[in-house]
Figure 1 (tube, rainbow, N blue to C red):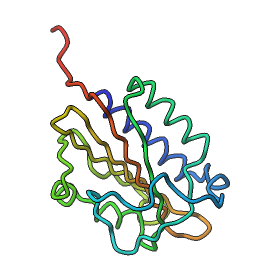
Figure 2 (cartoon, rainbow, N blue to C red; figure 1 turned 60 degrees about the vertical axis):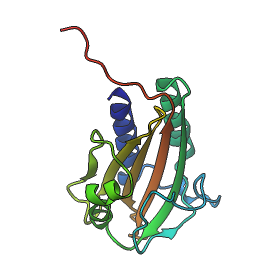
Figure 3 (cartoon, one colour; figure 1 turned 90 degrees about the vertical axis):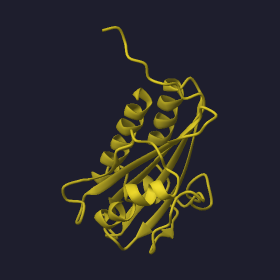
Length: 175
């Protein structure tokens, strides 16, 4: 449960940074985007996504990885990929429903699904978090983070996959 809160906070910080345009200048680099070449087989692909050369800003990427590795005692890895779409963030979160993701194998009841900014249809963003736990005590969290580029008006869609080893179970403390 604590790891879920950590992931939600980190993803919310990423969303806020992107939605506020703070990362706009940093996103213009020309390196290939992401650490993977395509979406993972267990992540449904929405029509209209085009892979792009957006990078998670270096400072944010390093901060996220350092924070998550420290919080998980170096028992995790992060991979991501970026896309653009002409659809708005609300359409992206409407596609990534709990039912669709459950059908694709995402089984965590603790993951909140999608949350939209109140202006997601125009200039805001959306954040979706899904999770699954395997029988070998490992777990995976998927964050789908969207923001609208103020220059191109296209929706930027980041998929971040966070794999955790030795996911502990939460036990209640003393009453």
